[in-house]
Amino acid sequence: MASRRAGCHESASLMLELLSPLSAGVNLGLVLLSAITSALSAAAGIGGGTLLIIAMAQVMPATALIPVHGMVQLGSNGGRAAMTWRHVRRDTVAAFLPGVIVGAVVAAWLLIRLPYGVLELCIAAFVLYSCWGPGLPQRAVGRTGTVIAGAVTTLLSSLVGASGPMVASFIKLGMSERLPRVATFASCMTLQHLTKAFIFGFAGFVFRDWLWLMLAMVAAGFLGTWLGLRLLHRVSDRRFDTFFKWTLTLLALRLIWLGAQRLLGLG
Image 1 (cartoon, rainbow, N blue to C red):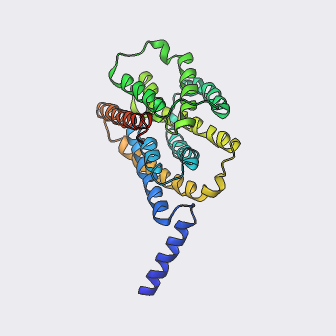
Image 2 (spheres, one colour):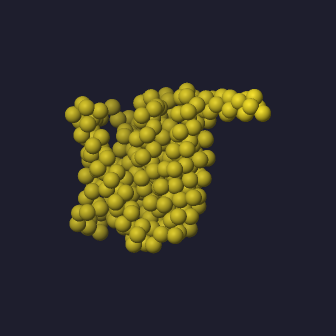
Image 3 (cartoon, one colour):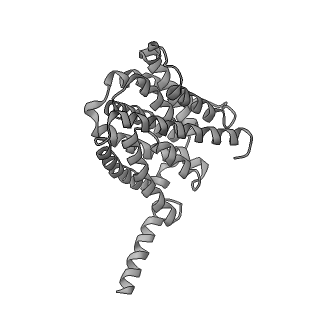
């Protein structure tokens, strides 16, 4: 019996090692974290993607971080969008799409980048303003404003990995009910992450080396999304809005810390 258990443990460890160039323990941790962060995004509407990329940054090479995270988030947001498609605000998604295309094209050709840390500070400032500042004028959430938001956030997503807080902040301005907010956010982020397959493929990133890890994390994320949506239906609009706002605020404060460290050369 002991030898059989040892054999099963060894087989499982070997399978985990084959997922990616990382160790078996790290691969398992990332798969479990994908489920947890997907549940958070489904229940709170935001937060999972940013938490996931912060954790991934601790154990993954920089060259693989953004493309792998992007494909995992593509699966997570795509699953959430599919599960909530009846609540998607299609007019917002349709206006967001042209901006996504423009932002992706610029990101694919961009050679000059802002100093490390500036982008994170800009995102954090926008998030905090959207949560606690005076409301933006109605034209900011109109069609033109949505196109601009799509372009800017797609560009940022390709450079710093996680633009979710900024997209969620923008969507929050035009929607009050939680289900349309979660569904529309998931749809917009699906379009945004889809562009990374082309951007980083064009740049020469070899997705094949990380394929099995990405698939395992997507599958775990799908389960986490299902669990998170069960919790979402049990939360009142008022409680959800409070939780959503404070989640954004905490993420913004985290981005300020990271941005300041990088800007000062401490990170």
